Amino acid sequence: MAPKAGTSWTWPDVLDGLKTAESLFLQMGEFVLRFESEEFGDEYEERARLELRETPEQKKEAVAKLRELLKADPELDVPYEEENFLLTFLRPTHFYPESAYTRMQNFFRFKVKYPKYCSGLIPSRERNVFEQGILTVFPTRDHLGRRVLLIEAGKKWKPKQCTLDEIFKGVMVVLEAAISEPRTQVSGVQVILDMDGLSLSHVWQFTPGFAKAVVDWVQDCIPVRLKGVHIVNQPYVFNMVFAIFKPLLNAKLRNRIHFHGTDRQSLLNHVDAKCLTTAYGGGVAIPDFPGGKLCDLLSNYDSHYELRAQNGYTTKK
Image 1 (cartoon, rainbow, N blue to C red):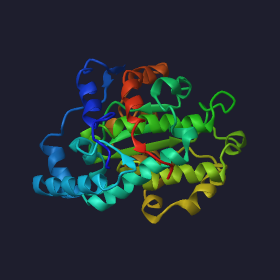
Image 2 (image 1 turned 180 degrees about the vertical axis):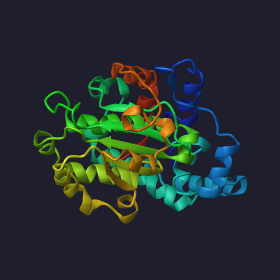
Image 3 (image 1 turned 90 degrees about the vertical axis):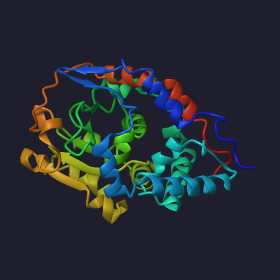
Image 4 (image 1 turned 180 degrees about the horizontal axis):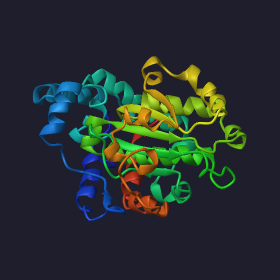
C-alpha cells in the first residue's frame, strides 16, 4: 500500500509555521533577513513561466503525474497530496514529473546513504558552525531574485574548533530553509565561497569521500536551482582542493563555477552589487554580528526540520 500523505510533516506545515512567525527576523544593520512564505508576485510568475514552463495548465498536469508516480512507490513515504511539497521538486526540474521524481528519490536516498550528515539535522544542533561566523545569508536578493549564501572557509575556519562535516551540515540546514521559499524555488541560489586564508591545514581536511558526497548532493539531490558558485580570494593551495572535486563535476555544474580571486568587478559581473557587502564590491553595509544569531533565527523552525526528517524511504535503498 502506498504511504498516506499527512502521516508526518507536510510542506504547507513548514510554510504555515513561517507565516505565524512573520515577526521573526534577523536585523543586519539597516537590513532585515527573514525567510519568506509568501507566494511570488507578477515578476516571479513571469520568470517561472519563461524559465520553468510554469503555467496553471502545466502545473496541474505535472502535479497530477508526479503524485501518480509517488502513489505507486510504497517505499517512499512523502506527503504526495500536498501540492507545495511537489512544487519544491517540480520547479527546479522545469515541471518534468519524471525528473522531479528521480530527484526526490535521490534526495531521500542520500539521507539513507549518509546518516552522518543527515541524521538529526536540525538548526539548533548545528550551532557551532554558525557561532564560528562561517555562514552568512545576505539579507537582500540579487537583481534576479536569487538568494546569496556566503561561506567563509579560510580565515574564519579553524579545523580544531569546527569540522568540515559541520560546515557541510550547516550549508544543508540553510539551503533546506531556502527551498521552502517559493521565490527561491523560482529564482534559485548563488553561493560565494571566500577562501581567503586557506592553508595546508585546511586542505588536509578534504577527502575524496567528502567531495563525492558534496557533489552528489548538489548535482543530483537537493531541489534547488544553483545558479552560480563564485570562488573569491583563493590562494594557490586552493588548486589542491579543487583537484579533488573537478573530476566529479558534470558539465552543467562546472560551467557555473567561477573563479574571481580578488577581482571584485569580475564578481559583480555575475552577482548584483545591491545584494553584496562592501567587502565584495557591493553597497550593503552589514556590521559584524554574532554568527549565532542566524542559528537563532533558523532554530525557531527546529520542529519543522524534525517533522521533515520523518519522511523518506521506509527501507534501506
